[in-house]
Image (cartoon, rainbow, N blue to C red; front, side):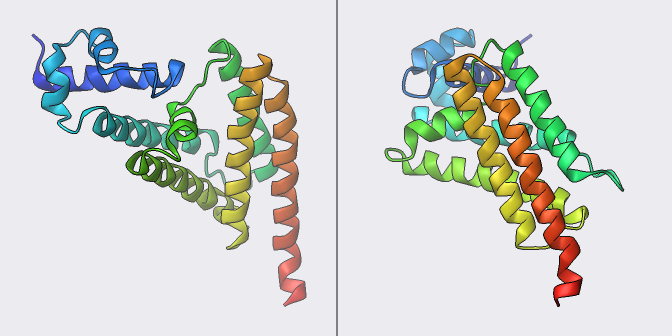
Length: 203
């Protein structure tokens, strides 16, 4: 027997998949509730603010899920080489992109590109998610010995490289951009590590 919680979750899941595959603007509420196998009125029962409120929920829910994925790709292993871990994370991301037939593996970037100049509440939600990812990755680099502000700058650069590489990879239908970005990301991390190692002598 389906519950109201099941219905709400199905709507969020359907919206997440549609936003990921075809974007926010192209995904209408009728299509979303149809994909969720839910009554049309239920969408506005759970999300009285309409598609904007649903979009915020998708962004925050997906953002939290991908934050867990980032934590899995960058495990806090004592003595691990951070540049190698970073490169390997990009390699795993390239494989995921290929397995998904070069559709966007994450709805956040897709929505962010669409709404940055038109939906302030959605822009803020995507900004919060990206900030949480940066904070999470910066914690990994901090644990590896890169001090602030370099840890956050490194994390921000690595995430920007990954998101940009996904976009180029989708356009080219190739994992090449992601693999090229992996080398650039590893180089950024090595430079930050070198700076951390030199800091005591410079002080």
